[in-house]
Length: 182
Image (cartoon, rainbow, N blue to C red; front, side):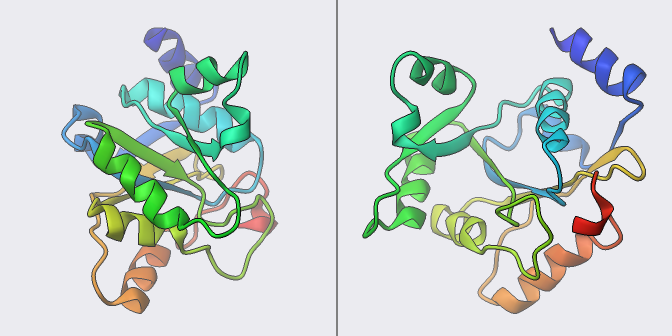
């Protein structure tokens, strides 16, 4: 199936990968992956193709109610992990524990939290990475240039403001599928 994903990604869609070549060499077994800008449902299949092309298993989280039969086994098979989203739960710590419990866990998230334009990102991904002591890998959903640019691993520091400035700079000028939401 990898050859089919490569054919679709490179030949049919005309996309390319730039940046961190180590990302596909299985050297980073635990990380938080952020995809920006998230402006369209098209981002999903680009992400799915990208993970197949580079040969890296990624994970996602969803509410526990989705992990019941018959879909539960499928969601787990494709990298899903369930979380309890009821109020009063420390979701950051719960998700950080997933990293501790698994030998390999690469959590993919969209920090905007929506496909619409936002003024600022949600910060959960950042605090999850800090609590789990794992790096953040940034990748672009650059529809203007048809490329996914992948960052080197970035470890959050104790300076949240500078860290977010650094991450925002990585995405400067990147246009999503719906440019006005970028």
